[in-house]
Image (cartoon, rainbow, N blue to C red):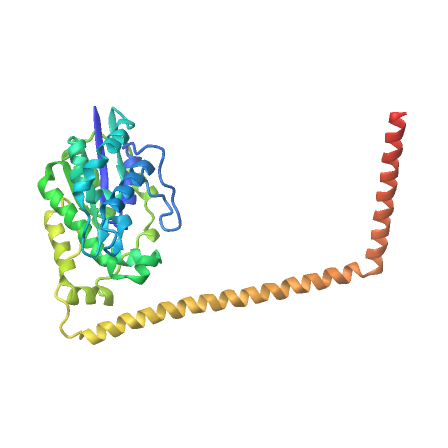
Length: 351
């Protein structure tokens, strides 16, 4: 029996970590996976065929005149036209046909979040793992990518987070019996809870292994940063754009594994001006740290050039010495003798 398993959620929310974990405990994600890079050193665990298919469909189904990030299916006016998806059904069925006919298999791609109803029609037996993460952590992670589109429009990260998670939540509420909705921060603390839900709620028959050890192998804490709740960016977001925290709370109310974030009132004694200046101060600190590193590299570079110049001067001095010239003449004499002997031996051989 085939059991398709789909891992999805907003980009930079922990979908790759989730996919690597459940792949390690027995879910077949195939062999043609997107390789890791400096932004995801452990790998993306995305089936390249599904990835390219969904990327193409979303781009073609967006209004090209509406600014946004069409690669993710998000535009400022949210013009993604899902009615166009049906024309790509034959290609989607072909992808499915080339996947295992038995066992637990699946794919991971954040873009699937916007195509859940499409895939549900084709794979009514599918099971879903929905990952979400705090909006400020996702925005922070996206900005660290230093992508041109998000550097120019940093607000896109938050708006896309809300767009994706609204779709995730809606599908979950309609099909909660076949989905697990969880906050990645909570799963990082207790990965066994996710395994229990896979087995008890979704009836998975997973390989019995040392899952805690496996999770420790696939997860590295340095690769998953979290902002402190008292960070000025978090405070500004909560006071000026509370709709993002409200959506986070709605996700938590529905989740099988809610987030460990407990909302508290933003201190009234902390004026907006203070939060803004604290955020600016931290930005300046980061810039000064980068400048210090660049200055240190420049000094090391100059020291290296001086060292190279010294070694070249020493080598030149050695080559100019009588001893070196004498050795060169001996070496050249030996080379000439060897060459002459070689010619004579060759001539004698032909004779």
